[in-house]
Length: 205
Image 1 (tube, rainbow, N blue to C red):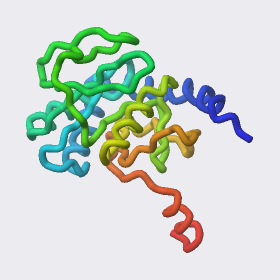
Image 2 (tube, one colour; image 1 turned 135 degrees about the horizontal axis):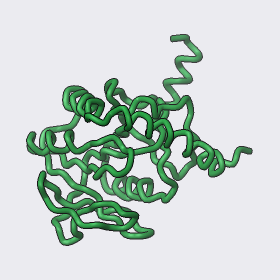
Image 3 (cartoon, one colour; image 1 turned 90 degrees about the vertical axis):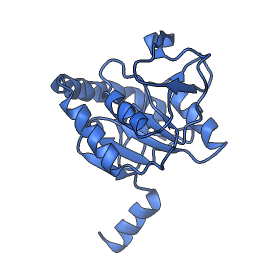
Image 4 (cartoon, rainbow, N blue to C red; image 1 turned 90 degrees about the horizontal axis):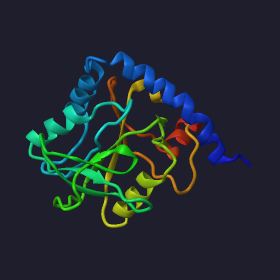
């Protein structure tokens, strides 16, 4: 039986290197803005829906142009506040708001900022596949957060990445929360589900 945790550990350096190279190419922000334009044109976000985003760190694709555009469209925007071992909470963010340093060196809103319960989550990642499996950093914060939110109401989870971060298959287990949509500089698409893959194999493409 495969050791899923070991497969994830083995994939992370490869995925991180792919992302690093894409990020180095994106020094002008061209790919990030292409991703933004695709998301604004093609991603189904209901009017007034609250959007949870992230503040990019390291080589993560820059989602801030998209968050700013969604804010201008009237969407409440939240950024995560992280506490060790707990699901993340989202707090109101507007362009030019001051953030505070938090755990893992991540910039985040002050916890006293009004809370936002997202209808849509924009999520960074190391790797993804066409079925919506997401490889993160191994802390489990994102999966715990998605599970907690989905227990309360439907939440649309969107993986935001460079196209080169896609792999044929990302190892996953029952605790991993799947993405609903995938957004890169090459476009937007809905994550496939296994039953559709089975039908395709049975009946042909």
